[in-house]
Amino acid sequence: MSFLRALKRCAVVGAVVLAGVSLQPASASASATPPPGPLVVGGTPAEQGEFPFMVRLSMGCGGALYEQDIVLTAAHCVDGSGPDTSITATAGVVDLESPDAVEVNSTEILQAPGYNGTGKDWALIKLAEPIDQPTLDIATDDSFNNGEFTVAGWGAATEGGGQERYLLKANVPFVSDADCEGAYSGSLVPSEEICAGFIDEGGTDTCQGDSGGPMFRDNGNGGWIQVGVVSWGQGCARPGFPGVYTEVSTFAADIQSAAAGL
Ligand code: ARG
Image (tube, rainbow, N blue to C red; front, side, top):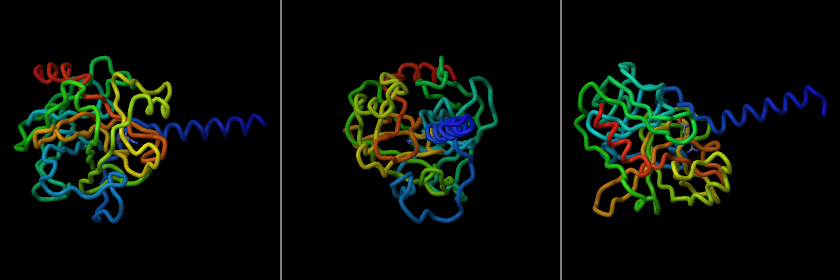
């Protein structure tokens, strides 16, 4: 192989890896027409009020109301910790362009202590005022880290696609650490990450712009409980490559104490 071909091959492989396993939030623009096909990837539109804790963040990420004035999102969606009034949280609507949308600015960010791009992908955003919507409880032990999960977001409905105007939802099954390590050997942090998706067939997944949003399940008591934060994956909805989520139960105590200090 010539030097040039070798170089090109490296560049292409590098580009694929960057595009495929990017932790970057998507750009914040939304498509103007209602979603036509399968959505989140492979999901369906959420009903108004179905997931009232869902928040869209202006940098192009999702989040969930942990408190009425604190959003739980992904560390890779924010830029360090400290005072920050630059983020707008949009809540209370499935349609981001609805006149009923509630928009509140951030005041402060707390990025997970020790976050360096591997694991620990959570952050809290303090809001200037509370949003009058129900909050989403987080799992404080691993008893909910199994079964069927729900994901929701305004991110891409196809790998490489644009952002969505209407909130989309999908259900995805738990994937064991062993199976997920099989897909992502060396990249997964099993104690800090939990995987979900249809590992054999693919087709349903979160995608770029869903980052920071919650993965949640039935709490056994008629409500929802958050088990994950959308973090990363190889592409979106590809067979063999489940979605990777921050394992909320691992960080529940840290999240609680961080929120108490905001
Ligand atoms: N990192 C992406 C974001 O910033 C989320 C990717 C999720 N990917 C997946 N295949 N589940 O929006």
